Length: 169
Image (cartoon, rainbow, N blue to C red; front, side, top):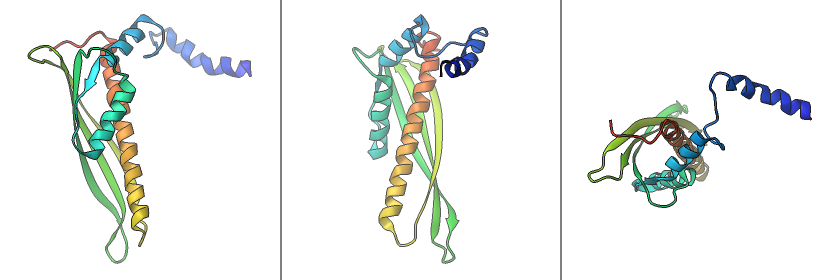
């Protein structure tokens, strides 16, 4: 078992020589990144999926103390019917979720220090004559999209904070 762990650790050791280091951990850059993420306050995002996205972002950011940054997110959805039954009713739906985000510092007036757009895609089937199954499938797809967007946004913020506190550019 220990030889197995050693083999799994070899890629990480090989990357260490080229300057690779984990985003999270006990090194000073990782600590600065974590502190930077904790200093972000997430603004209100309208509608139910916006509320879910805000909650996921707050969970991942771990906001504590006095915020130094405000994250403002706009969330939009596009729906595309992909499959059809012989009677023309849809049998499969694809959802595209797009989050445009803006990171401002808390100065007066606030200055834009980072921005980005993240997209996630998912699809679900619509069973024939089973409204509740279709509704449950749609809600599950939307939850997966929200989770993916939150993960992508926090990852991009972490990369931004890793190089030092974001400055207005």
